[in-house]
Image 1 (tube, rainbow, N blue to C red):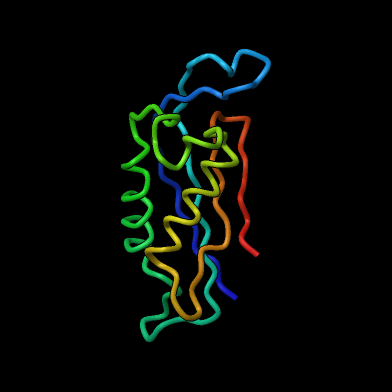
Image 2 (image 1 turned 135 degrees about the vertical axis):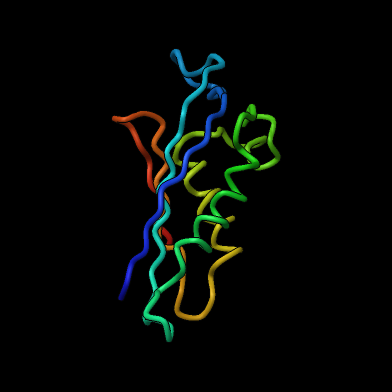
Length: 123
């Protein structure tokens, strides 16, 4: 099994509805997003997945989030845009673009600060 990992960034505002604390108020983060893809084999050029393909797919997804008020996006109207939900959303959206036989998004981590992150892992 091989793993390919990239990191990208986006900035956005959100608030956590129903949260009892400061995060209930509107605030923003500069998120770092880490995407890990697993592949069970290499292609003829020796790659599990071209980094450029993974970066492009991830950038397309993050472009929807960048400089947005996340609570207003369809994906987060019913559920808070927590780091956990952001990681899950990015995972699903990147997977739609790059998953294929033998290649699959395995996990996504959304870092909301240098010391706090949440990871969504696909089974």
